[in-house]
Amino acid sequence: TMATFKLENVEDLYEIGEVLGSGHFGQVREVRERTTGQRWAGKFLKVRRGAGSWLGVERKNVEKEVEVLQSLQHPNIMALRDVFESKAEVVLIVELISGGELFDFIAEKESLSESEGIDFLKQILHGVSYMHSKNIGHFDLKPENIMLSARGEPLPDIKIIDFGMAHHFIQGEEYKSMGGTPQYIAPEVINYEPLGTATDMWSIGVITYILLSGLSPFQGNTDEETLRNIVDMIYEFDDHHFRRTSTMAKDFIQQLLVKDQIKRMTADESLLHPWIKPLTRTQVANRNHSSINMKNFKKFNAKRKWKMSYNMVFACNRLFRLQLLCKHSTLEDQELRQCESDQEDTETKPASLIRRRPSNSS
Ligand code: ATP
Image 1 (cartoon, rainbow, N blue to C red):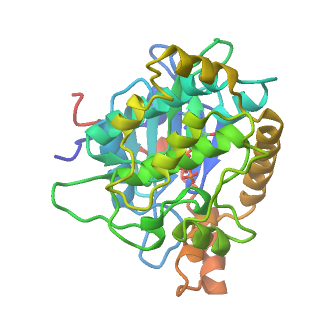
Image 2: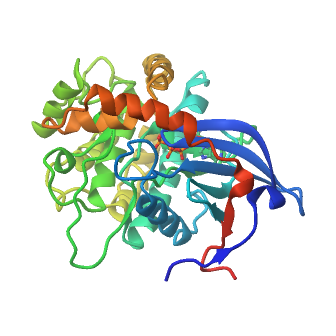
């Protein structure tokens, strides 16, 4: 059952503050609840107005993101508090996540042992395992979507964000999608085959590989080359970059970067892998003595940040991304221009928004 509408303005209840980040369809801003003074984040999404428009999210996709978030309550997954909507915009009031991205946090460290890295990875796996137990796949797991609750604590909590591509599987249904970021997508995405929760586990394999070495396993000189490397399963553990990596860590990655989804390690299985859950004293010692290739990791992260800001130049980045994946589709100049002009005139005042209460809280 879909949520009911409540005629309230977001600005009556929340004071809108500074911009925290931006995505393809709008901004994320800090908001303050007027009655309690509590701080939250507001994700402002532009909704596509018609079939002819390229900019904005399709309403059915926003509904999908909301429904997914409503069904997920876990310490490692960004919590949804409230939803407001108007014809042109939807605002999700979500838990404020102030620790920044995990990769940025790690890149500031002098060194990191595998055990310390695992403390974070385990939380990612717990969140993903919970999500998968609810038959939900995220389908866009990548460093940008793995954040930390707060800084200044020795071990901050992992928070998985951005459920814009997530899907709730219905028993017996086939689901295909072309979305994602080349570096992190599984072969079944590129081949346009049915996806499963295993698709997320591939991305976790890629993220772990990068975390340990600062290298991206399938990265080619172009996106096309990257996609080909993924489909052809061309990757290796370069001796130089992995010289301080434990054998167990490599085994963990190898069980995730498996082409056949059925044979790929599941989230629950991965939590029981000896690298994550060591059974012997030797296994514990190995993890403590092995370390992340910090020098190369910092290099990877700096390059990633540079690329991210470069990508922001394009308002229609997601279209470009899709275009890379769909060889047959070419966007006409005109459509791209339309996209830019759309952006200017969909500016709606949050005051015109209507509150929509999540169906599980009345
Ligand atoms: P994308 O276009 O990458 O899919 P999106 O439009 O779906 O993005 P998000 O990825 O959810 O938007 O958020 C965009 C950025 O806003 C994030 O990268 C992050 O920096 C920031 N952000 C998102 N959610 C929160 C939050 N709950 N608290 C603080 N900052 C957040």
